[in-house]
Image (cartoon, rainbow, N blue to C red; front, top):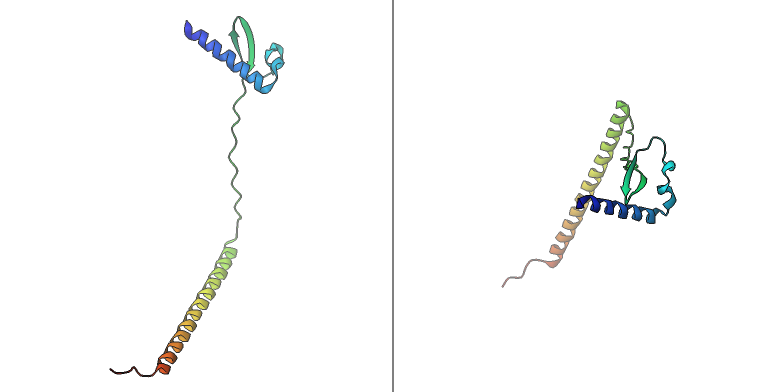
Length: 122
């Protein structure tokens, strides 16, 4: 069965890679070093038993949403009324500035027309 040999070779390569990355070769080869309560998988590679600890994957927990500030209905109402009043003040100021600009522009236009005099006839 060729696939069993290929699987065993792949497991051996994976163990060698893990050992090279972690730098803890002695911990993986000691059979009595396994923790109580953690699952242990045992694979036979080239007639040698190797104990490998299987750790559950570390899944990051999603962030908790920020708690909502509870407001009394009266407080919400007064805040909304204040915001609306502020909005109305801005709108009235914009309208007043537009009217002043329009009046100033028309005044300048009328003065320019008056200073130019009547158009010349041909």
